[in-house]
Image 1 (tube, helix red, strand yellow):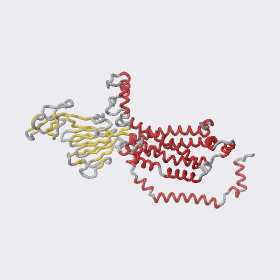
Image 2: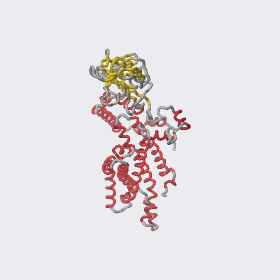
Image 3: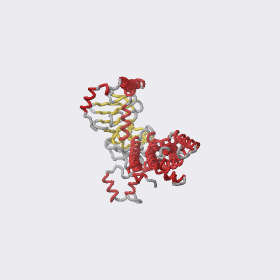
Image 4: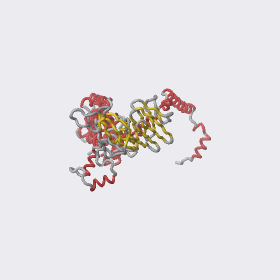
Length: 511
């Protein structure tokens, strides 16, 4: 058959334009549909105020939220006393409670404090555990940490004066060219070429010298001043303390937490200790100790996360297998061409409708209330939902089989069970297995969601991390693990389905 070239088609169209031109009605219909879609989009934009939503969106919070997934913050608090500073870190701070990062510089000196006099036969209170106010000015040269002079009685208060080395000045470097210098009574903040000086009246007010720069804010006179440094962090200057939030890229302490003897050591030193170093714990090797420290990392909880992830995988697998096994015989009862009883057909189909009409998440809530939180509730939710779905899919597949194979088996006088075994099952088994494999991969994702309502698995762990609103790096870690598992299972499922559905004819034969 001859094939026309583009030029020949163009010549024919020019000679007979009425043949190639569509009817006026069709041309107008196309324009009407296009205008209708455009009008609907314009109406939706106006009705839902999409422009205002985008304009008023708090994009700064969204950016900080996304940054929390791949960054961490170190949060020292610098308390301002009368003549010294108290530097502390939160309990689970990435640098530990006794952190000493290189970007926080301290200057120490001997200061004098007055503590209450001991009563009765009690021993003189130590400087570290006493309470009282600080008097006098900084004096003397810095002494070694922890050193103190003899205590002398204070006749004015009835207590005793103790000289002790304390931090009297702190400098915090946040990012490039950003400094916070803190001494009792004054906080100096430098960002680039701009400087902000704030006077602190302890327990009363914070007052800036001069107007505030654009990167600082204060809601009312005397209230705290918040200074922003962009991504590197921010600081809150209050009347008795300065709270620092210094942000860094990465996941802090992902391998070892601050309680591990390997924490803070370079990788080369850690490998050297594991390979040939002297035992840190006499009861076990350094390799066993390191592995235990990794698994039981208090900040990342690797062992618990991996265990919960395995629970999710098992939950999806067991629920899918049980649903497939139950739906298989019920589908034969629901198929009209297999089971001639209309009552049996209707009962089986209505059962499938009931099981799949209730969402898996709702079933998970029901079973969490019945069995308590845990994998059993998740397995039951997947089992109930998938039994209804598989039953419908399997029965429809059975109703569309080729009856010639059944007739051939029946013509040789085979029993009804053998007719189904050799005339029906070989046709539908590859399809059944393919559908089950697809839902197994899909249920791995669904098991994560239902776990968040108490059905166990990594979903519950994920929800607990999200509720704190501060452990978003842990959330990112678990989401990444879920993505890896889903990716692997998706590829396995696709490969098996291709093999069953025609990639390998031998794979489609019943066992």
